[in-house]
Length: 576
Image 1 (cartoon, rainbow, N blue to C red):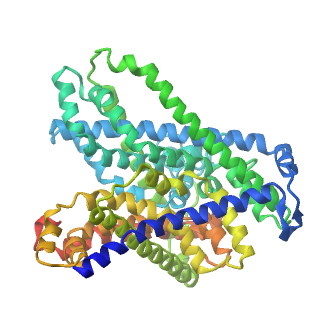
Image 2 (cartoon, rainbow, N blue to C red):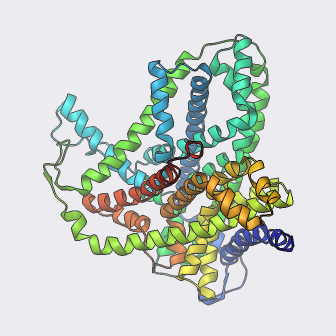
Image 3 (cartoon, one colour):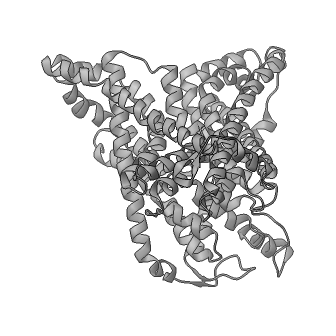
């Protein structure tokens, strides 16, 4: 009994440690970027507070277009991703309610559902590199189009990558964010018993699609509001995808800030800090406008929700199937294009496949690949292990002490995803330099942990909370301690969710670009930083090597997460 009391009394330390882990670096990072933006950075000669830096920022000729491009691409990508996610979720829910497994449309939605998680696991930079190969004027789509229909001998004079309006950037973001929002919607549906509401709508003569929109969507949207906000904040401040697919003259605001940071003239750090503060204000303003737009839209559609108009939704069903297949097909061809380029020796236009194949691209970069891959693997494992310990401790604290996960804690968990990375990471870098901590492995792991932990918590929380309480209660009745119950009952029963959460966290760690760049101080190279740096070059073979390996790592982690429980419990079908 004394051991049980002592163990339970230590559990509140996990939520406290997790809150400090989030609040300290973010608060310090915000102060670290706010002070230089006001002219105060003694190490660079800034000893007085003033607003001259902001005046220089607003007079910069590239700023107006950079701000417009940031808002246009970020808001457009979020709107399109949310629309497609809602459309696909409505159709997937329809198929699960109708139970018709033999129709052609049902088969299409099965493909979409099964391809969802592998698509989420592909890092943003790898997907952007593959998409650039796919939609470029001499890319794979144009090559097939020329081979089948047009017979072009030279590529068309079209700007399809890094176009001035950021359309390719929007497409790349939609390709990654739609599956994430769809997964969040599907995870939230059981909480509101969506299928029962759809059946109620059917009994009143509504079609499946209208039933979902009128009865399910108003209840499920508040549950996914934070993920939507996270997507909006990420789309406004993304750097790696914007470097690959976005315009360059001028770029988005986040890329412009990165250019100022990389400028050899250290006085540009003041301008970069002011730009980071402006990016934070733009993001907060966009989130506020989005929230106000939600309220206005609800007031406008309130009558539509209760006007009694029926409809079958056949057009929406076809649109959902087409958009789902387009997303999956584009993602698959993007990753396949990386693999083909990594194995090609000669692939001239307009051939649709390489004329000569070789493994020399991999052999030539094998030594540097080993070091970079090991750093990526080591960093991901450390971040995932620490995050799993903290998350499991927080969830155990909930159950043993009978405390619920508060709304404030949920916002705190999403805080690193809602604040632009360029804002607080730049502040952390400035403070780390002052404290002589920049470029250390500890700071690098900490920066990755800020983004890994939220995704692991969101992936693991529902399976942990939904575990049948009778299993741990039996252990308690037999006199088992909380640690014994955890390691001998809960962890084996939840092995699959644990490994899936670890795979998701590892994929998030592999995808981090700015945290590695800022916290690592240029001393640590990962597959993502190398892939993005090589993207500025013209050798597609090298880009293919690093991009494909970057996409392969999360897939291997996900495959292990799904295979290990199946092997471990091969004689216990109920645990699979």
